[in-house]
Picture 1 (cartoon, rainbow, N blue to C red):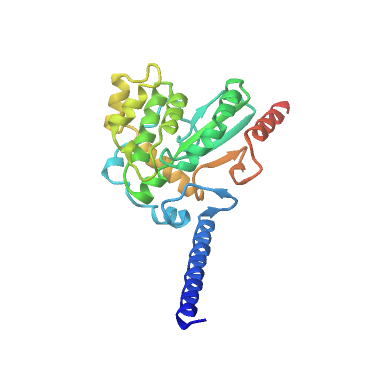
Picture 2: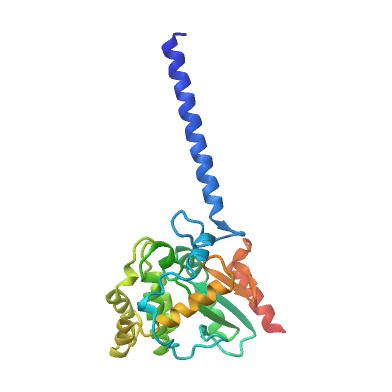
Length: 258
């Protein structure tokens, strides 16, 4: 074999080794973005735990300053819970979400039909907490503005429907389209009776911005590491890889037998 051929084979082996190492490194990075057993919404290639820790005092800014105005019907010890379903339901699901978070959208796409069925049957109460994790990690105000708009929809008694519309029309994680109030108002047109002067004023004024900041602060103080965080009667079921809508339905029905 000529020296040229040997050199060519050696170079090819080296290229293959480099490529394999790149693949292994990529896999290590992917695993590093897994929190516990669940895939959480991560910010680019940054580990979400580091992002949460770094953002405890960031980007509250003047836009979030001012008195905390909770939306109508908000409950909870800190007043940051938006409830959906009957108050006396025997089972409770607590959901922490960011409207810019792709993993939150995936959760909603999978579980929304089941959640609607159970809440409408009076068997389940869902308590929503709104988070601005993506804004703080990638920049922008889409998480906050969408959360404010959702709180405005709660004032109008149409949170659940508008919540679903926002996730159905979620932009790419890197696209801060929800920062545009015009887009949020446009999407309100998909919910019967929501696009009113009162709703528009609430959105454009950022009436609930400080409340959204308070909700995100509660998320950080709770020690949660990513979105969505989904708790069934206090237990984090999003970390359970065996969890399915059908399994959740069975758990709710069991709770209602007690």
